[in-house]
Amino acid sequence: MDGWYVDDRCTNCDVARQFAPDLIGEADGKSRILRPPRDAAENRRLHAAVFACPTRSIRPASGQPDRALDPFPMALDDGVLICGHNATRTAGANSYLLRWPSGTTMMIDTPRWSRALAERCTARGPVTDVLLTHRDHAAHGRRYADHFGARLWIHEGDLDAAPDADRVVRGLEPVEVGAGVTVHPLPGHTQGSVLYLADDRYCFSGDSFYWSRGTGDLEVAESVTWYSIEELAASLARTAGRLRFEWVLPGHGDRRRLPADEMSRRLGLLTERVRQLRPQPIDFTAVRW
Image 1 (cartoon, helix red, strand yellow):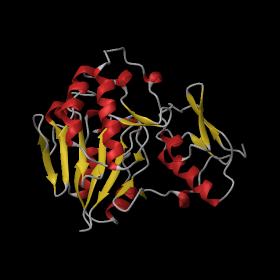
Image 2 (cartoon, one colour):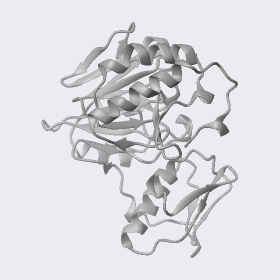
Image 3 (tube, one colour):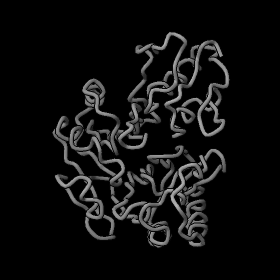
Image 4 (cartoon, one colour):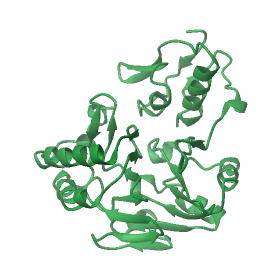
């Protein structure tokens, strides 16, 4: 495949395939190169996969990717950037920057720690808040918050994962984080899972639900629910009607933009499907990417 390969550190987290699904596929529980890039645009997409992969498993024949093609943080639209450089300590979770017209920025979950990446993030505007969706994604939160001089947020249910958080969300009711941003507690994946809703446009869903390319729909990772699938069902039933958004931007799984009415319809159907689920053993291989 023109020298490109996937090394044996791959954990099948799906991150690389999200950026270059036409170039990187899945076989036997691992990513694999489908074909080499044919033009500059495809080469850029492949390098986005390279610099997002948490294990750095996507490699050119030389072994060293072109650092000049590191695109991160990379704009998804005019209000959100994806950070790339996913961290092994967050199981390869995606993280995002939410930008406001005022020039201020919030970080949702965190990439691997990198001073250079942190400085590229602040070049877009001062980062005022680091918003953690749950305990699994807390690893680098304090370090980024301290670098930015930002407030670190987490829900009380997962507070032991970030005991020095500056802001603690309590209870089950929505709380305003800042102008246009609301945190909605959504226990289920973990006891302290939340999602952040911004401007009725962006839903940073953490690991509560995601877009599956395989099913072409919103899904929950019922086989990787650490706390309670029944609690997740109750959370969705309580919260789904309060949410209106165009973008679903999860920690794990793919992201997707649809008209808000269509997202609402699909979220309602997901809520009904989750109501029928029952606990099962943890099984990472059963996630429907």
